[in-house]
Image (cartoon, rainbow, N blue to C red):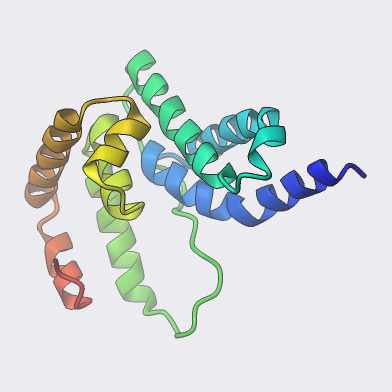
Length: 176
């Protein structure tokens, strides 16, 4: 078997769960997330010859996902829903508090469903992916000002539609 194909296969097997979590947060839909990851991985595969040595394959794939999502939100004006479940990371050292996780997941799902795709994308990049405003702007192909305004609008809307998220965040001891 071709060593490049083996490397790409390994990359896909190991990084797809993390890519799916990000894609789900970007799209709000499990099936759209799968489509987004599949489209991004197809483009990554086409560029694998130049990516495999650089170690930037995941960064390239994520940037491709963000660009595809931006082009999808610009093209499509369909009401969104968030069926499906947020993919969970594998492993974990301690026993999870299922009631707390379920409450958080349901609250987060309902709150994210009330945001526009643009607002959700900015929040995912800024807070889930821990990107700077400049990085988020670059990945989305928008200005830093757009990232700032969309972040501000999204957080303001979250404070109104889901004030309980702030309480849950403080309860976990991770308030910023």
